[in-house]
Every structure is written in C-alpha cells, then in structure tokens.
Image (cartoon, rainbow, N blue to C red):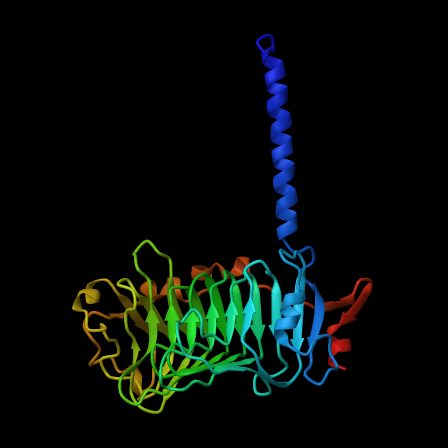
Length: 343
C-alpha cells in the first residue's frame, strides 16, 4: 500500500463511488412501483367467488417490500375482522364498491393503538368505498381505524365509533368525501392531514370534542385541516381540544350546524395550552360558525393567514397522491381492464 500512487487512489475512489451509486439505484428501483397505472388484482368475496374469503388473507398474500401496486377488491358484505396492513407492505389499495354495502366491523375497547378494526402501518396506502366501524359503544376507547403509515389516502369511506373513532396517528394523510362519526375526541392523533369535503357527525350530547390533535412542538409540521367540510350532530360539541400542547387544527370554508358550542374550542382544563395551541377558522358558515362568543385565544384567519391551509401543500399531496389504476393483472401475463372487472 505504501507504494500506491495518487492515480491508484483516485481509481479506487471512483470504483467505490460507482458501486455505492449502483446499489442506491437498485434499492430505489426496488422500492418504487414500476407502473402506477397497473395493479395486481386480488378479490375478496365471502361467497367464495374471489381469490380469498377474508380481507386479512388477501393482505397477507401481498409480498413483503413489494414494488408493485396491489389492488384488493372487496365484494359487498359485512366482514367481521380485525385487520392490520403491516409496515412492510406498501402500495396497497383496499377498495369496496360502495361504503354502504362493504363493511369492516369489530367490537373492542382498550388502548387506542390496539382496539382498531383497521390498522394501517404501511406507507402509500389507499382505502376507498368502505365502512370501517367499531361497535363497542360509549363505554370507553374504541378505535375504528388507526392510520400510522405515511402517505395514506381515503376516499368515500365511512368511519364510525364513539370515542377516538379515527386515530389519525402519524404521517401525511388525505381524506376526501369521507363520513366520520363519534362523540369524544373522535378525530385524534398527530398526523399532518387534510380533510376535504368530509362530513363530521357528532354523537355528543353535552360537550364532547370533535378533534384532539396531538402536536407537541412548534417545530412539528403536523395538524388537521378541514376544507369545505360539513359538521352536524345530535347535541353539543367543541371543535377541538389540545391533546398536545401545540395542538393545531384549522377549519376553512366549512358548514357548522348549531351543534357547535359557541366558544368553539376547549383548553382541556389546562389554561397554559391557550398560549401554545393553534386553532383557526376561515370563512366558515352556518349557525355554529358565529364568532361572537369564540374563545379569545382562537384565530379568525385572514386570507393570507389561511392560504397555507387551503391547498395540499402541507401534506405534500401533489408528490404522492396517485390516480386509481386503469389496468389490473390477475396473474402473470394476463391483463384485465376496469371495464372487464365491472362486468
């Protein structure tokens, strides 16, 4: 080694760089789907006319660290299953035909991380046209869905329980045209999430809270944004209370029925959080949107203040939200189009 000249050193460095670069490219290729328009189709049918009778069996059939899209089509029925999408199975779409007739149901109370009917730990997950419910009732924490994977999107789903209905735990998430129902803290967690065109229905009869966002630091880019949504209910409810000291929730262009308590927001019996929580409203309307009795520590946002919350930029959605696949592979070498599957 003592006699090696500078050119030999340079050649070794170049070779090592090429090896490392090639390895990185292989790993990147292995993690990214090759064709975003084509998915491997797995069908779930309780009547035995699909590839699987249970949803969990279809998820288990997806290979670990898969690099292709998987589309699990769930035929109408009520599926009494406790379902987990593991962290090592990204790029899965779980789809019903209509939320009204494709139902995932469970009945369990306990910890918010353990009781969910559907737990999503994987990244790049899509759920659509499903009802996801926990039927335990009002006696304790009973999560319908826990979302702990990054880059998850939900379309046209119904998410139903009473306490802690949706644990919107961590990651960047998007909810479009979903119906979410509960009585106490029924949208909770520390994700960075945009809810667009969603219907929130409160079952609270006294002073339950719709949201309990868990942001713990001003450096965390997390929070819940409700854009163009609708709030209804049967009694009286707060818009939110701070699970975390720096809890952040914004309602924009949202209809609020008279279910909303006039002060709007609750400090969870900790006045110190009034200085750190960020609760904002922008161009909301309806009887529950009257600002005259709102707590002084909430914010009536100007157009400039609201602007960052009116797009998908906070969740980086333009970089990861994907269109539905148009082609489906039922088996190697066989392609089925959407039209074929609907017949």
